[in-house]
Amino acid sequence: MSPRLLALWLKETIALLRDRHGLLALFIMPTVFILVMTMALRDAFSPGVTIDAAYVVVDLDHSPHSGALIKRLDKTAAFRRLPLEDSPDLARQGILQGRQTLALVLPKGFGERLLTPSGADGQASEPLQLLLDPALNPALQLAFRNQVMAALGALRADELTRKAGKLFGLPPTAAADSEKDWLDEIRSEAVRSDANPGIPSSVQQNVPAWLIFAMFFVVIPVSSIFIIERQQGTLQRLRAMGVPFHLLLAGKLLPFFIVNQLQALLMVLVGIYLVPLFGSEALDMPGKLPLLFNWWIVSVAVSLAAVAWALLVASLARTSEQATIVGGVGNILMGAIGGIMVPKFIMPAAMQTLAGFSPMAWGLEGFHIVMLRHGSLGDLWPSLARLLTFAALSLLAAMWLNHRTRTAQS
Image (cartoon, rainbow, N blue to C red):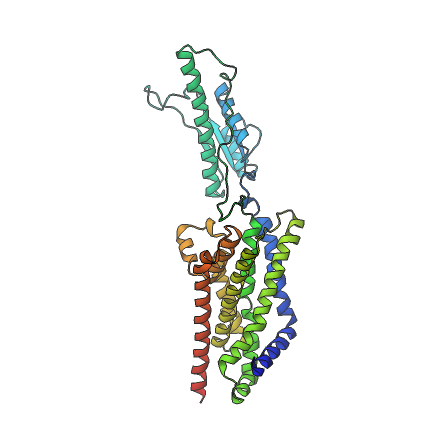
């Protein structure tokens, strides 16, 4: 081990410890984001949870069939039904006043024409009317529409069965005059590399996501220290003593790499022990040592990419203000398109394609491969290769920028 490298690591550690506020922010910021975003997105990752969107039904038919449809809608329990309204105007008023976001109007003659397509007998059928709040999420609008269509389809199937039995003279059964309750024949299961069923939770999205975001924010202390040393002539004196620039970069890598690993350890502990205190699930980490090792390998690759990116920003910027703007905006953009702030599966297809260019998305994909699919190192290789390539290119660019600056000064 080179004594000069040990001395550089000691220098960087002392400089880092002097910036206690910046160091503290690297740990507090992701902790707060993990707690807030895990609570905010908890229901989005929990299938079967009642959606907090209320609706009313306006029954203008008052027939047994309209009553049966309402009962079927109640059984799905995905949306919250409020007491019946008497007229479409009252339902519209309720939407405008914010009491509900949806209203389903069952027209007169609904039960009478349940099995008669509109125009089949020369008469037009009045369609069901769906009143909705324009601010309601389009995905929820579609989900409610599909829920109504499913209940309507089941009601028609029951009515057809009843009429067919009557036509062929089949003896009526006890359940013939009531709607049949079919068991839920669809079971969701996350596909993993081993037999470990279950559904990922919001904490498994947010802990690695905000950990990556915090790791990349070492750009602020790295660039600040680097620029101060350049302005005070520390770097020039080290170069005059024959210390090569690549050794200076290596001297900055280890202390901030250790900071990143401490961030990783703390955020995992937050996910396991602190998040459940706020009502969410605990972070489910892989229980086998090879998988934990794979998780740490991803953490190492993300850390190398983050510190290399920070050194590139520090080499580009002339002042601390420039470094804060370039590094901060760059991190926010990488987080926004990389699935950190908004889960990737919520994004439209074009944005999901764009996410493939963000180093933060590569890191998040690597963590998910280990945590959700229990993937091997071979499965991780594409993500690791892109992160390490990004780190190598950033370091080479930083070295080239500093070489060009020295050449211009000499």
